Length: 364
Image (tube, rainbow, N blue to C red):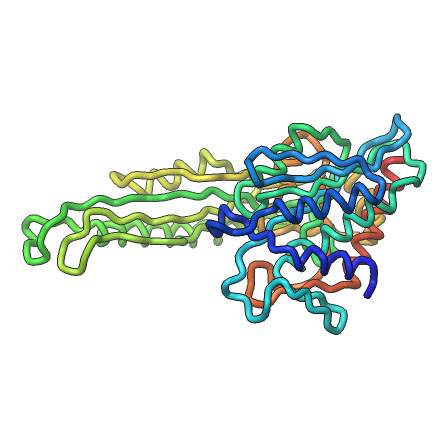
């Protein structure tokens, strides 16, 4: 087994399901200890930040001699749940060049590649620092990266989310929301007294569907397409034989560069009418300037002539918002959040090489 496959398998074997997704789940404490100990043995300076109890993130620094530019390499520790998986999620099975298991693709394989690249940078005589940030809670609220960017100052960053070895310089944002319609409780035999909150939500759903059609028919971003909207959860009523007092819909609006949370709120308020609208967590879309020197350098070391976009949101949005030029480059595979998840081990070797070569040029 190769060095990167062995380390990736060790990470996959550690349960780090996000407890904000699955109450009572393991969280990042055990895997953070593993990563911190491994980086320290590899010669990096290690710091642990813990903005929430039991939700640590690890910062490992391959310290340069001084006077050079600093590179951050970011990967997350947490995973989504395992209930729907078709095989043992933490077995870390290696077969025909693929490593299987929860988090192998999203994104412990890339974390292993980043750790090895950072360790490779130790003793290379670089002037600038190479900093690996292994963060908690990317799958929910990104408290790890929020804490890290408040503490770490860098001149550029690579986020190693899976990109199929393409260089991604843009991704979508999102805004969560709830709409609540209210009715009047009455016996099911008394339509003269009752008002049906669920029926009122039907009109809202039709309007949301129409908005989604308009969004997807709009002018697409050249790398990430159009905005979109979907209903995620719905609940209402109290029993079979009564008019429902309330109905609550949870939904999500995906945004592209140029769209704002304020715009989303205006769209939703126009649809909600007299219903109650509550906005939830939101993140802005991300786009790096294609002509930035770091973007050009990352493209050269990755061997790509064209840029890509990611349809999903990543912590790159937070890092870029902190004023750090950022790109995404990560491995190939399949099954993020799915029943079968795997990562291509050869692509992990490539990620390790690209991250190291980028660091050698950027931080010298």
